[in-house]
Length: 455
Ligand SMILES: [Zn+2]
Image 1: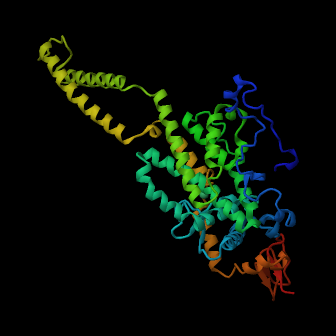
Image 2 (image 1 turned 180 degrees about the vertical axis):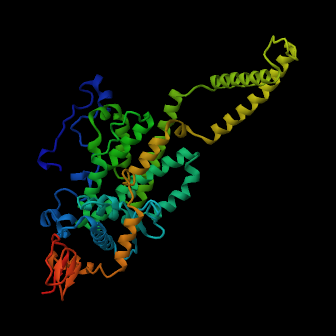
Image 3 (image 1 turned 135 degrees about the vertical axis):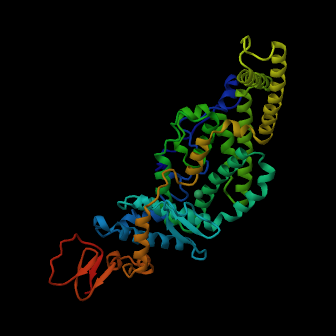
């Protein structure tokens, strides 16, 4: 959380006072400089930190608000079903006019949210054993609901402009990732406008996926991947940008900050911002490829050698080594055959190389697959995206269909007295024991659960 009193005011020497320093100064980024271009405050979440609603409902997380029952080992399905109902309701409140369905990811089921159908898929394994990550899961679901509400126009726009902007597969993937990163921040900002009370779920989600992520320490990352990391952090979690990165990427950070500054003020602004950042990154890829790339001449030399080696091997295989007494062909003939075979081979290699060059861009060359996948996942909160077993999923769904699930979610949301409505079963003839009713004469040996006595 940001301590507002400690805001640092930096004074700069007027330009021209130390002329030798001026040029370098503009590239330097101090460790104290706040890189959050939007001043979002705590947890880098819109409306997060010390806003009015947090003071009035201090500490009201889902875990605190709803989980009053103790669950036994074998009743995780019941607990998860209940949580799923709560989260589903939260998503409804975010925008009741936009329909959605909610599902926990299973290995063989659909792994991702389908915006067209309004079908939200989240990582239920986060609460597989206990409710500690319930706020994170709620944040995840709300984030997906925000996509369902807001992101269709951006997807349509992406499809429209892609052919003109992207010349290769790598460029398409880069464009997609930049759009995702900017869009995530845009939709979360919309929540703060309409449903400020839910912002702390997003905060929990960001904390879970970004604060502890190791994108900043992975040594394997390529130069280009590293630059994308800086962009991702700048938009989503600036405190991850350490001193080393501030130094390494100072000019990039300056330019990217100015590109995103008003980049999520409106839908039109997101489009402009995405294009700007994408084009900037493509230009950087071009530079990096040029610096590290081989020149065409040496590539051609390599292909020629490869062709001759290939032809020599083939001829030796068929007619024996040169100088071999059993050899059927003389040296002159051998040379002609090798030349001819190598010539054909070279033309084939060259034509493949040319077509590869036409279809690929610098982005394809400098951006590795592993990093692409990492960004794709992190840009949609699914670094640790896990699934629940088919069996558990079935249990939860069966329970939902049975009369086990009696909690009135609507009432629950309105009610302040959670104990009153937290009952999964009301026992009239018998008495409450754990999550079910037993005969009044029996002795209950289960820990307190969600069943209640009628009186
Ligand atoms: Zn997202």
